[in-house]
Image (cartoon, rainbow, N blue to C red; front, side):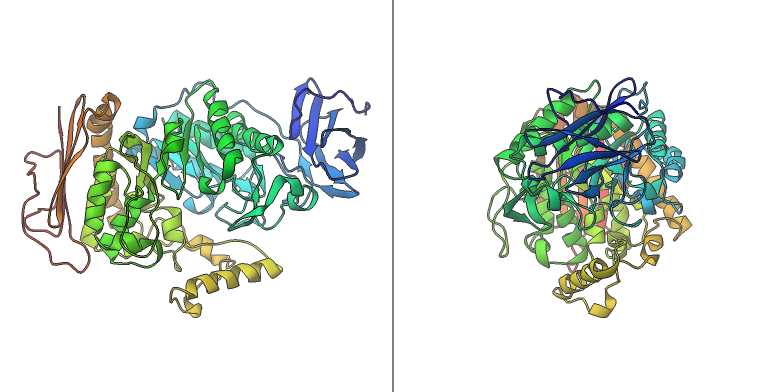
Amino acid sequence: MPQTQTATPAHPRWGAIPTRAGLWHFGIWAPTVSDIALHLDGRTHPMTRVDGWALAECPAEPGMDYGFVLDGTLRPDPATRLQAGDVHGPSRLPDLMTPHPAWSGRPWDEAVIYELHVGSFTRDGTYAAAARDLPRLAKLGITAIELMPLSQFEGNRGWGYDGVLIRAPHPAYGPPEDLRRLIAAAHDHGIMVLLDLVMNHFGPSGNYLHGYCPEFFDEARHTPWGAAIDFHKPQVRRFFLDSAQGWLSDYGFDGLRLDAVHQIAGMGGRQFLRELAEQLRGLDRPVHLVTEDERNLPDLREAGYDAEWNDDWHHAIHCALTGESQGYYEPFAADPLGDLAHAMRHGQIDEGQPRPGSRPPRGAPARHLPPTAFVNSNQTHDQIGNRALGDRLSTLAPAEALPVIHALLLCLPQIPMLFMGEETGSTAPFQFFCDFTGDLARATREGRERELSEIGIPKDDIPDPNDPDILAQCYPFGQDPAREDRFATLTEQALRLRRDRIVPLLKSGLVAAPEVTRDGHALSAAWRFDAGTLRIGLRLTPKGATAEAAPFPQPLPEADLTLGDPERDAYALAVRIDT
């Protein structure tokens, strides 16, 4: 093989990048490692050292295995796009392909998001099997699927939030070509594909950066997963910027859901999030960016991010229907219907004001943002899976309430998100599961037992997350076909109304602040847009309260969608669009 080239690129990059015919650039940043070499296809090549970087340009081709020899120890490329096997072994040069060429994306105001976990969404647990279900989702009216994290992690089973090779697709779901085909098939059905991307921590097994590049982390600041990532350093920001753009460029994703951005903190974190939006907005098609942020602050949306997960909505709905008040539910349990009214007016509930209970205030006013800046959900992987038994709201709430809150979610002006199976009223659990071994498996099991026993759950009732049977139990379909058909019909009806009558209003823009009135357990709300008015009447009797018999505060005759009777039923909904 020809000799390694020693030319130094003007801007060093992480990973393996094809540069010109037959040549690949290899780079890694490890400033305190004394000796670094490239191991490629069974041969070792020297690397040029520049400002903490180790760089080389070599003849290579897809399918070759490689890694970096760091002070005598061979490690996988932390920016690998493909592994030869597990997270501990060699990396492999990928066969880069062009994503779907004809797709031009969809506007954000058309989004109806469907969150799914590839490994449990189908019995096969693969990209190919998920692609076969796309026609059903498209028929229902789903316009976006959000895949839970795909970065490669230890073992086969897991939620994906323990990824350690952030840019390499997890192989248990199929080869990279099948992921490209899934996304292309979704686009053929008019469905956007978002990726849940974790850039605030690495998983506990297979992350070798801690050992050879401690400069990547800020030991003075800690997160729930250990030392924080140091986004103040440009080399660290570059690692994640390239990783994020790589998922969009290599596979054709339409956008990202950024996990726990409140842990991407400090001036460096804010700079990174700003640079990320600027870089991805520079692509040649619409790119949608959604955040998860416990702070309830509007700043990222003001800076150009499309939306934020609105857990406030979930918490108020959950407390109203279950009566639960433990943990973070405490402030929402005092008056959940009042909180829902607040969310209808302002988007979110916690805006920095004093709240019931012992928790300090959080958030800042966000009422100036459009409704589409909030992603509302009644169930998510977090809110189901972080319960001891992974029980869904559909198993906790009154049966007659479920169609009402389901249709309500789909007809609100905020962006709705369903968790897989919710469209058919699934009652299957979604439990926490992983695939660790040895001490890490034991520590994970004991940690979960300790955490859940603190809120009164007996140790014997807590499943072992390493139990391989848990994954199969999370398959969300087939429990009750008749029930599934009823919910699917309602989903399709509500989403047809949203597509035909509500989305045109969203596109025209709000012209006045939302109007919400309350009478006991009933709410009437109106959102006035330039193209017309969306009116909703809701009766939602909180758990333990006596059902009332009275009309909505503002009656809605000739509604476009009606469920129940507010003068007779504990749960009722009416939706009308005036144009």
